[in-house]
Amino acid sequence: MEWENQTFNPDFILMGIFNYTPTHIFLFSLVLGIFTMALLANTLMVLVIYLDTRLHTPMYFLLSQLSLMDLMVICTTVPKMAHSYLSGRKSISVAGCEAQIFFYVSLFGAECFLLAVMAYDRYVAICYPLQYHSLMNWKLCGLLAASSWFLGAFDGIVELAATLSFSYCGSREIAQFFCDVPALLHLSCTDTSTFETLIFICCVVMLLLPLSLIIISYTRVIITVIRMSSGEGRHKAFTTCTSHLIVVGMYYGAAMFIYMRPNSNRSPTQDKMVSTFYTILTPMLNPLIYSLRNKDVAKAFSKVLGKRKFREQIG
Image 1 (cartoon, rainbow, N blue to C red):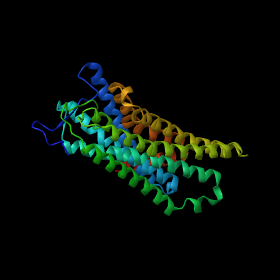
Image 2 (spheres, rainbow, N blue to C red):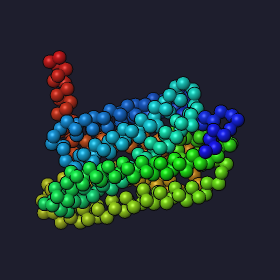
Image 3 (cartoon, helix red, strand yellow):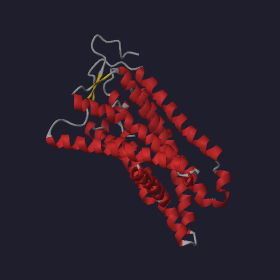
Image 4 (cartoon, rainbow, N blue to C red):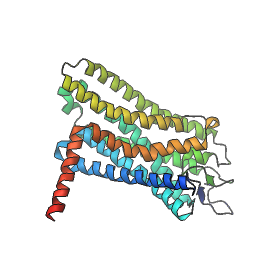
């Protein structure tokens, strides 16, 4: 690897997304507020699903895995961004950059596959309700969830290994608030065309294949729901599926915009805005969407918070 084979400081510089004007100070404060909400909401979601036995089903187990991934995503990017902004030190070590690339790409890939698994779970639950517990048993559910984590980590290792092989002999300024692979490619003095082709292939595998499975699953689900005779069952099925489809739309839309555009059409400003959306805003929205549109989760939230308030009163 050529990162350290330099006569100057090998650290990279994260240019970030904010300056120190009043408007940007307000926006930075807003991002910190969103980060705090996302941190609390996803932590609470994981705890509620773990503590409430009524939520010990494959659907909610997968939802807890999604919240855990969202929790790790925001902790991979936002703390470093906040530290750089508050301290004025924008540098990030090579090791720190490597860690961000691995965790970010791994979690990105894992969420892609997990969303497809969640779509399959809803497909089985709605289209084959009588066979649900045999078709989506705990062993299979755990295997599918573990596979999502493994495939994401594998993608992270592949992209990290390829990125490490490049020489960075020009500017060290990354036009992002974290070490993102597309932003790093602009700094390399090595021909990256082969790697860009690899990224495109990875995007097809990590984005388009899971998205195709999601579309097929929900096409079957919608057909089944329309044929339901029970209005209450139809409403419950639509509510659950709509929540998932909103999350899928936000996540895949932003990811495809970032990673499936040719470099000639890239704009650092657009990349920063979209990256901010799906690395900071989406992890906050996910637990809110699922908790507000799901009565079981909302009741579990109220139950856990009610117990806490009661303990504080008697304490």
